[in-house]
Structure formats: C-alpha cells, structure tokens
Length: 181
Image 1 (tube, rainbow, N blue to C red):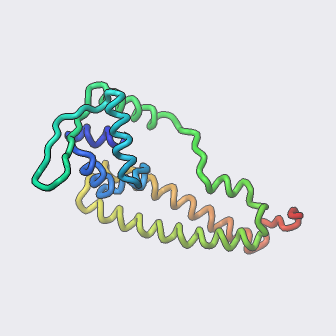
Image 2: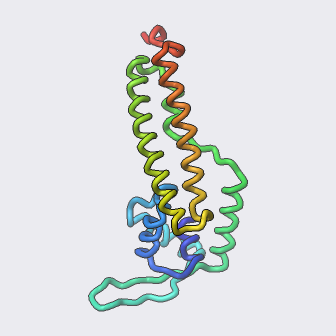
Image 3: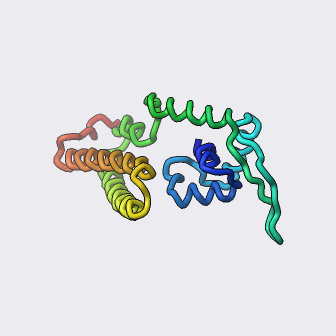
C-alpha cells in the first residue's frame, strides 16, 4: 500500500520511495526498515501488474535506476485496499495486550517495575510525537498528519491506562502473588 501510494503521486525509483517513507515518517506506520523489503515489494507489485517500469536510466558513476509507475489495476487495487482498511476493523495481535493477559507469570513487584519502564518509554514517545506533529503542522496540511494524530490518541490512551494500572499495583488494588506456585 505504501509503495502504491507513492507511485500514485508520481513515477519514482525505489530509493526515492524509501527516502519519502522516512522523510514523511511513514516508517512509523509501515514496516520498511530494510531497503531490501522495498525491492522485494516492488518485485511482487510488478509480477501482479500493479506497477510497471516507466524507464531505466544511469547517471555518470551511479547505479542504474528504474522508475516505476502505477498501472490502472494498481490504482484500483490501492483504492480497494484503502476502502477496506478504513471501513473494516482488523483483528490484530499486538504484544502488549498479550503480555497483560499473562501478567500473573511475574511477581506483582516485577510487573510494576516493568510497567513503570513502559510508562517512561510511553512518555518519551508521546513527547517525541508531539514534537513531530508540531513540526509537521508548520508546513503540512492536516490531511498528511492524521495517522500521527491517531498514533498520538492511541499512545495517550495507553499511557493513561498504564499509569492507572501501576497505581493499582502500587496501592494494592491489584495483587496476585498468592496465585503463583
């Protein structure tokens, strides 16, 4: 979806796609940590007929660059994916709720310590995201920041929940050490 969206803007080569993903912080919402994953995705999109090679060129001592463009089938597929992803809540399995499901595996004090570490990380993440949003709002229309707004809302909700959970552990409103063998 990310690569199809980029070539929908304009034809471009793989390196430019990866640059834009990082510049726009889209790597916070799609996993393209490895450059190779971009090339593998391009190969799959080519085989599926969703993108096509527009041109291949070489400049001086640089490697050959292939510019890709969106096909009509690619545009229709992208729009179908977007409609589905926006309309249908996905059944996802993030790690944190799974860890909460098995919380009694740790003694309450250890769980509290780990959750306090999480609080610090969440607070730092929220501060960074607030900075990113403020910076982006200076030159980007809100339309290009909505995923960061969503991430902020989710992060804020998690932060509030974990704070309350830590307080419950600290004050003894939640305890389970008696359940351990």
